[in-house]
Length: 325
Image 1 (tube, one colour):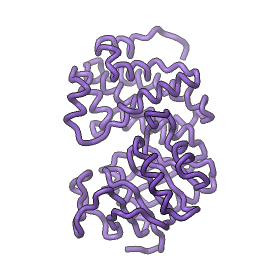
Image 2 (tube, rainbow, N blue to C red; image 1 turned 45 degrees about the vertical axis):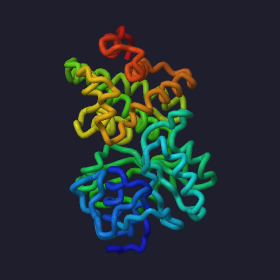
Image 3 (cartoon, rainbow, N blue to C red; image 1 turned 60 degrees about the vertical axis):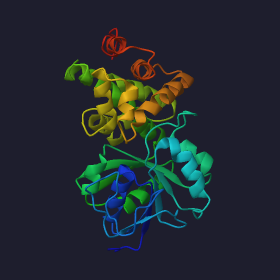
């Protein structure tokens, strides 16, 4: 039931978009959920999140919104440019857009908000990121995330709109740190999965995750972000979930790689996107551009591009020479 008169529009009806539509409905708002090919009228269960019935407050549509209190852009980062260009053509000026995708645009190594700055200039924007599995958000299990904008007042306003009793949002102005952490964690999760799949143990996985955090923090600072952000929900929080939970697409892909299954075979057997595969080379290219040393991220990327064998990657991931922490 619409209790507060607000309208929250969600663009993208994948698992994460569907889950965020469910979460938005719990705020008492009217919710529209855009999907490229809408389901027939009356269907309340969407293919990307089976078993979840959409709340009555959610309307599925194939038409972009012209007005809303806030728009959540929940499409894969590689399609964010084309979708945001189309959305900008109809959305009223001043309506804030929150990107909820994690990764870097492969062709440009740009973070999502930088893409939006090009496609939706002068529009208020923010990013939402945190340790969230879609199915748990959809079910209303307790969760938290970070919502960041260069305009901290806007970030606080948007958290007040999107907060509910089961989904707690924290405002931040560190868009570089939040976006980079959300992008890099998918790549690290693949590496963590490789360690487990190859039988190298949980100690090895913990070591890899911890040292990867140091690499991400260095890159975040080079981009104008704060290393301290990596200690929060969008940093360590998301890494803990994505690098240990079997529900993580990137982690499970890494496990299969570590077991020796070819990447092409793994991808062919999946209907969902493992963003880390496409983000990895863009992330390393960004690090090189900024002059930041990221050996763990590089090793994972080289394995994905078959520049390294699994055995070589195992050695490089865990047998690095000791240095000062």
